[in-house]
Structures are given as structure tokens and as C-alpha cells.
Length: 352
Image (cartoon, rainbow, N blue to C red; front, top):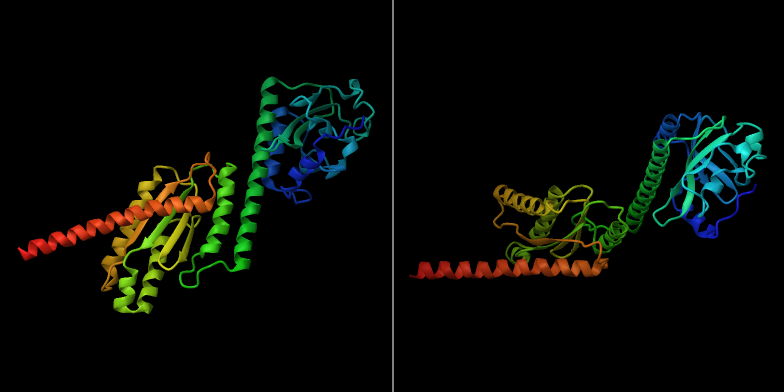
């Protein structure tokens, strides 16, 4: 019996195509899933089957030679239907009128038993199955069926990871293409930061980044004084050294940028909430270490702060940056007040 076409077929095919997985070479991480499915279910054949428009294509296969078969002959095309039981199990194909005359039953590989767990995307499209096949009628125990479904979920997670990686690679290529970096520091410039930060924010809101996401905003203190007293070349060196300290403080996976002038920003990826104080202290210590060893007639100083992004609020990046900037500015204003009070107290004491 020819499998019916799902009512959401066009959207389902788009969901499949976004993984860019069809017709790719065999990969060990997918073969591991079929091996486990075969062992757990004691089945000679195991497949990761993806249902394309007119074919089923196998990303991984054990005990089965073809790389694809016609969709009309596919057991998996029945398993992905919205009203199909999950997992989809046929204990004896010769007793099921949908499959008894199927060439895959009457001929090689002589399928008599089938069990398929659907690969369901985060937006609820069934794009294929992880399935096991035997040449004799049989059934699976409850624990075997649960394990098959658990493995199918892991396959879907691996596909999602592949999609995320592809998106990040595309974003990196776009950054390189547009030359979105700051010439002085080698960090991203404002435009580059927004391109990359928006991508990370999108992944975070889609829950592809499992831990917390932070925004850093930082402002150099007294850059104008350095420029006025020691000249603009020295001011440029101070900016470059500040960028080096930021790169030293944060990880290669974090996104850092010079927004312009003495302003810096960062996206801190996959950092736990407890990391706030660690990041804060590390940046302070790195500034102190540089100032102690630089021999410069001035000291580098930064006003900076970090905010934790709330995934439930789903605010745009520009608004989040404004919030972080406001928090940083309050800290900077507090430092200025304290500095003025300290200067006034020192003058009063020496005057007395």
C-alpha cells in the first residue's frame, strides 16, 4: 500500500532541508546510533531513514546495502504520519495488508518485522525515523521500545547541533566577507558585533545555547586625558592594550567588539550565573597586573558591567545593549563621585 502524504508535507520538507543532511557521506556519530539500535533490539538491520519528496534516504545503515529506496515502498513513510503510533511497529508484515505485497517484503531483504521511532524536530515535524528490521516475525519489549525512542531523540538532537554549527559557520563567513572588524584592535566593530550577537541571541532564544548568555559593556576611563597629555598615538596604544586585556580575560568562544572610541562590548556565551563575579574579578585583576608592569605614566581603567539576558523576555539586541550600557554608566558615575570625594578629602587634609 502506497503511504499517504502528510497534510503539512511542504513545511515538513522545508524542515528536513534546513538540516542540509541529504546525500552527505556516512559519519561515525550517526553510525553509532544505528549500531546501538541494532544491539538493543537484537535486529540485523538498523537505519536512520530520512523521508524526502519521492525517496527515503539512509544517513546510516547496518545490514542493508541500498543508500535509498522509493518512498512508495517505505515503511518509514507510514511511521512519520501524524496519526501513526509512536513507535510504529509491524510484528508480521505478511499479516498486514499495507505491507504484505511490498517488494521489500516479498523480495530482498524480506522484511517480516519493522519498528520505527520518528525523528521529530523541535517545531514538531517528523522528518524520518530510526528503525530496526528483522527477517522473522517478532516483537520488542517495552524497554527496547523506550530505548529506540530515546535514541531517536538523540539523533534529532545531533541533527539540531549540525544545523546550529552550519548557522555559526555561515555567520562567520558572512563576518569575514563583510570585513566587520576594527583595524586598531582586531576586535569586531559595531556592525560586526551586531551581526554576530544577533545570531547568538537567536540561538539562545531557540534554546540552542543551554547555559546563560551575558552582555558586557565597557568604557575606558580618562582616555581624553591620555590623548591630551601624551598624544593621540599613545591614546591609540591604550585602546589596543585595553582590547588585549579583554581578550586575555574572556574565552575564544566569547564575542568581543570595539564599538568605537573608548567603548567596548561583549557577548559571553554559555556562562553560568555564578560566573559573573569570576568574570568581574578577572578583568579587574588583569587591569591591575598590566598597570603594575607597564611602566606607563598613566593607568588603564575600565568602567564595565554585565547583564544576564532573560530568555523569556525575548528583547532585541539593541535594547539589551542599552540596558547594559545604562548599568555600566551608573557604575562609572559612581566611580567618578567617589574619585571626586577622595580628591576633596585629600585636599582638605593637606590644607589643614
